[in-house]
Image (cartoon, rainbow, N blue to C red; front, side, top):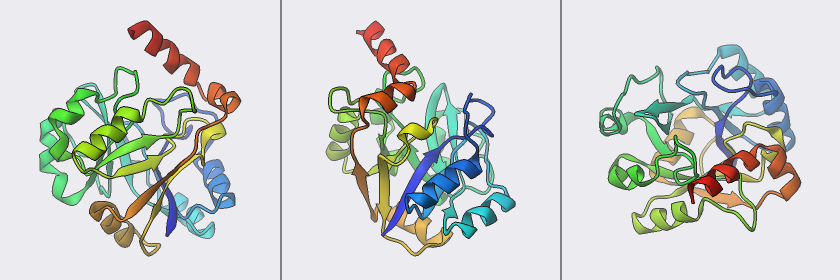
Amino acid sequence: MLKADFHLHTKEDKEDNIAHSAKELIKLAAKQKFSVLSFTFHNYLFYPKDLSQFAKKHNITLIPGAELTIAGKHVLVHGIKTLPKITRLHDLEEIKDHTIITAPHPFFPTVNALGNQLIEHINLFDNIEYTARYNHLINFNRKAVSIAKKYSKPLLGNSDCHHLNYFGYTFTNIAADNNLNSIIDSLKSGKFKLETKPIPLKPLLKSGFESVYKEYILRK
């Protein structure tokens, strides 16, 4: 089994204000015995050759991916060679056969979460994400678990890392050889297992979770 995280952001992602670099995250992941990472920048495919080689030196395989904004909603795609040009969710059908499509943080209280649109387009998604930012009191993943069970969709554990404080609490163990094709095949066939534990309150608040919680309160 390979320890993997398929939803990562770093300061090279121009749509986010992030302190850590891709190389810093790779070094941290290596210390935590990760074997697979995917940098999923917003509407940008970040898969430079020199970074892939740097990761290899740390026994880590990089998987190409991106976090697309489609009709205002976030969607993860992996195994892509170029950035798909999609403007409507139902157009994901065009790339479904040759990519991995995951619903990230689908029921978190943010405007870009898929919410019930995930249910409307459930057949287009290979996986549903179980996202790291939660604790034993507040967990916006609960509905994602329910929907995954109802529609027989596997849960893919990711950090959605924007802050190093919460990296490593939620991840995926994937049954694959440590190469791109084997990992993509295992993602497509659901040969993986969610691993997760709640984040202690202090690092959770440092991660910006407080702003998510405030939005949740305002919406109630």
